[in-house]
Length: 101
Image (cartoon, rainbow, N blue to C red; front, side):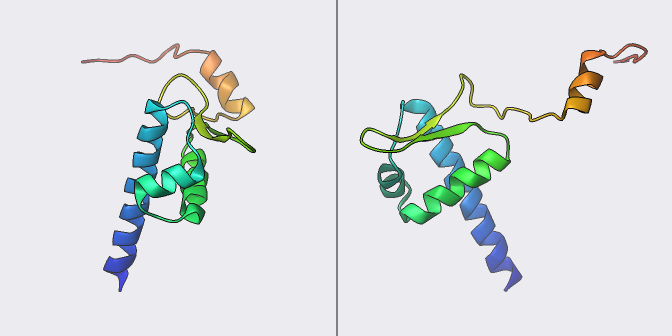
């Protein structure tokens, strides 16, 4: 039974990545368009979007006629969501750190 759960999770990840790649190639896509492309139902598209947002990707949504999902930003790489304390640490640089190759 556990192997079925792993397979389902892997399918979910693969579908979310396909969705993201498609959104990177078009300006905007409706949930129905994405569901047809991924051969799934519209409800799953909403779940894939939530998973991608949790992973750090900026996926916007416009409601109404002409609306749909779109990648919000220029790159396809995730946008790290840092806390204020992490931003302050990052801004200090890496003084005192020596990298040896």
